[in-house]
Amino acid sequence: MLSPPGAGKGTHGRWLTQQTGAIHISSGDLLRDEVASGSHLGQQLAGYTARGDLVPDDLIFSILMPAVIAAARETGGYVLDGFPRTMPQALRAAQLGAELDLTCDAVVYLTAPEDELVARLLDRGDRDGRDDDRLAVIRHRLAVFAGETAPLVDYYRSREILLELSTDRPEAEVRADLRAWFEARGLMRSADGKAPSRRLLSSPQQLSHSRPAEPQPG
Ligand code: ADP
Image (cartoon, rainbow, N blue to C red):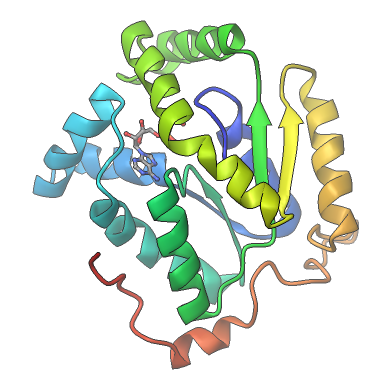
């Protein structure tokens, strides 16, 4: 899920996991859990997330990779929500994917007008009290998206795995478009609940023959 803050990657990502049998892995949720744990690492992370700055790549990879490896073993697939967010993350993920024989079948790019994004995030801030859902931090996160993350759109479009969808319309319409696109690629569960005809990832068993899961520095 590759989207600006507030576009609905959490909502639609969770729905996609139900439909595909994949596991939902949200980098933001993993970071917030670590912050809430009060660990030393969590204290380091809190500064970045509260300001709306990106967390350094090495920290992101060390937090994310164990979840990705476990998901690949358990279900053969996952929906990554909030990662990758920069070109260096995307390139390093592609390299790790090649080493671990994990493939990326789809990149969903959700869009909405900026005013709508801001309104949704302010609303969520009132409801859930997330400390980065305040106007100044929201504006900064949108600027970080435009500068760091938006270039990934062209990168994935050129690899022909990008689905771009507006979420400025009823949720049911967004879901219908997601379903049609994923079904056309054999990535949805069938109506009887069977796993997708095509795995979201190639054989997870191959992971055990691969190099150690921990990402290498640099
Ligand atoms: P949103 O997309 O609404 O900003 P997320 O939960 O995806 O919410 O991310 C919240 C924060 O977590 C980001 O502002 C950033 O500080 C950090 N974060 C999440 N994913 C990444 C990532 N892949 N790389 C660096 N920082 C990240």
